[in-house]
Length: 406
Image (cartoon, rainbow, N blue to C red):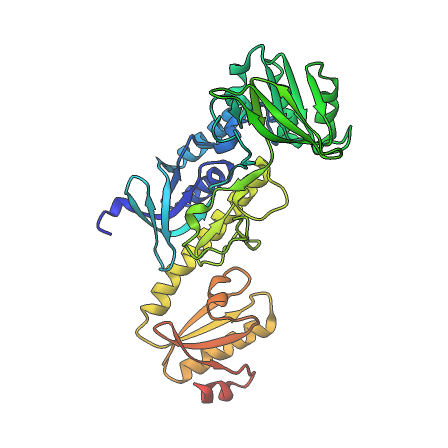
């Protein structure tokens, strides 16, 4: 790639709380960092009118919190690009990212933080009437239903909390719930507030079959799950809050492992199955999808990426570019046996005239090389030539035995 301005240490795909946290940690570590985001910085959090459980912010809007995140990242020199990633190549040391506008970028490490998007029920009328009464974001669209009747589909935190927000504008909000009367999937505080809201009504044991209307929403067809009967309810708007799907469709040909829903499995370091590529936030398999957990993901991934880049640089300098063959020693600095073996190895090499270059790797802090060479226990020594393994040395406390193996 000829354009050096498109070369980065770290590229983050997505500008929500996970991506922005990654950017803050990455740039603070002096990594040249770029965030590519296809929409407004902050992602879906921008549609949250009120956040009351993010530490240090007793009450703040999602958009204001994300603005603080972005300002923090900018203070460390993070670059931002509004564009959409359409393809990736993670097969080489430098990962290639191509955007919808035809730009190509290269990075030593990539963090996938593209988040998720509302799941569609794909019932008759839903897609056809999107933007004409069918909506998925109360903060974005509730004001358009001033004095009208609205249906909310779903009973989780998002559905109930957004439904209460819609009551500030609508004359009535009817919530369609799959469960028996009184059973909601949201937290207890939101449920109690919803039941006390005079503008909210509930239709239990039911689901929505069709959105009715020609050019605009005029009503919905509702099916009772117990009786099997269907009824129609007049309304001017329908808000769907029935879950999310990960926005990982652009990764289908990337080699990144995903489950059948498109979520990415990672380890405790947020590593994917592709070296130097990490996944954070709502697009990964996880238990809790909240701003605070997304921020934690981002911090972990950025620190792991920084260490990966450091190890990559050290590998290239100390091993690939070494004129001598390398003795790659994996040890544990807190283990006396490891330390004693390290000393013996150094002495043996010196007595052989410094035939080899000794490179030491502490397994406690640098795990990427161990994973690369499939080393699981210490002390362990590999003989390398330009990075290619020639052989493993057998562990011994006998210096002469070590020399005989060399």
